[in-house]
Length: 124
Image 1 (cartoon, rainbow, N blue to C red):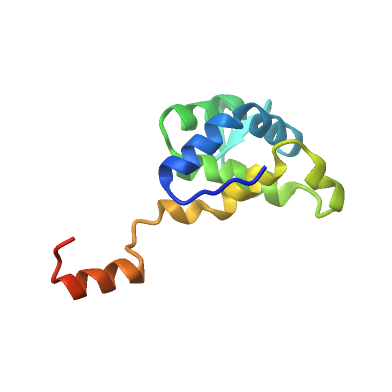
Image 2 (image 1 turned 135 degrees about the vertical axis):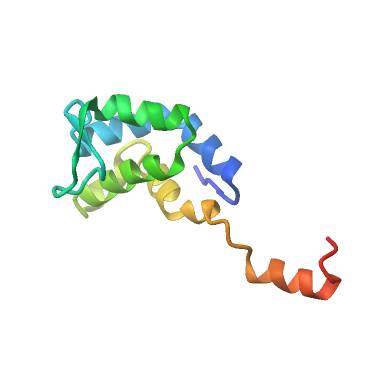
């Protein structure tokens, strides 16, 4: 299935629709039932005392904390082996899309938006 993520709302909708598969991937490639870490997937990261990965990732989702969620998603992406079979895991391509399309959270205006603003004198 082709997913097109072009906005923050697209990103959140994609995450929500695929949440069960995403959690299964996180469990497979990150120690979700173990202690959560400040930077998931980084062995040098500080532990979040008394919090498991499940609790931390669910809290991040409920709080719409894309930065923390992306740490988990990227942690799983980078922890997984770079093999052909990885793409057969249900939800894997969606996880990759969510990671690679995180630019939607950049608050910087695009060059096209800036050019439009200069052309119209700031009137949109």
